[in-house]
Image (cartoon, rainbow over all chains, first blue to last red; front, side, top):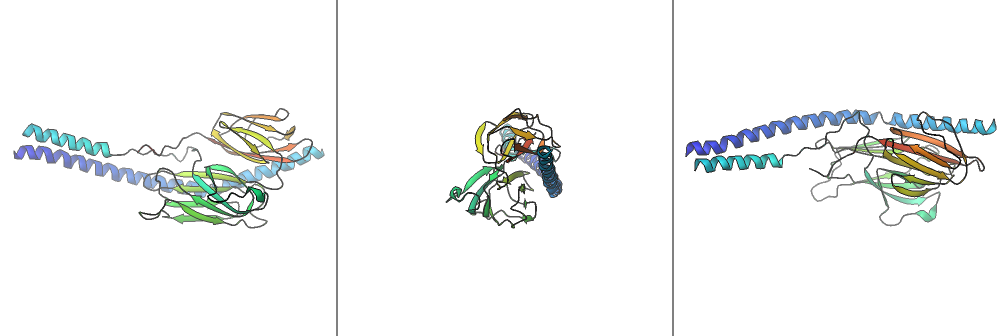
Length: 68
Length: 245
């Protein structure tokens, strides 16, 4: 009887512990990735600057092409 | 009895396993589709007063061209129950950032941001608006990119982009998976100069382009009218999956 109960409880406890550790690891990995994305995002304005400069250069070149 | 207990343990353990979730883990090196839903309410439009959307506003799925207006309300509402642990809104002039913007249990999962463009700085051609949402726990991040119609860019075109056909009044944005074929038909023949992203040169009035990876901008000038058209392309390589867990 006791053996049967232990057979029921121990696998549950072990599974619960495994799931808990997995979730902690996943959560830490997610948080690490979150900060990586936040850092990447903070540099995204440079894309906007690059696009803006590219657009201005194209407009100037089109104007020169027309005038030339 | 012993067999029954072991079987019960197995069932309960399986139940635990089945409750586990496997969210999509995003990679910072991958360019993902811009699909953050944003509802835009224009208070007053400058360029086209008749186009003021009344009531709920217009909802965009991660990208679009906004009417020129003196004031906007952006309603950010992430998909898949994603939390707004970090929201950033960046223009060519300013950056707003907010943390932990997700409301309480009964609140709507959305955030309203009032945007009044600074005259002469933000209401100029090609002042892109970026909105990004990061969810620290689930990793359900989302992005959006908008261009704004302006008075200097007025060469119309019929834009066929990712299965949808629309009429652009001079400013267009097209998002699709990189390499897919898209098409613009201008109202007249256009001049074009190469940019730092490669696309084929337009043939007469027609531009057929394979969307380059990432964000690119292209300018076109009408040969007769001298009017300009601006096309921003967004070529993604990764899809975002949020509804499966």
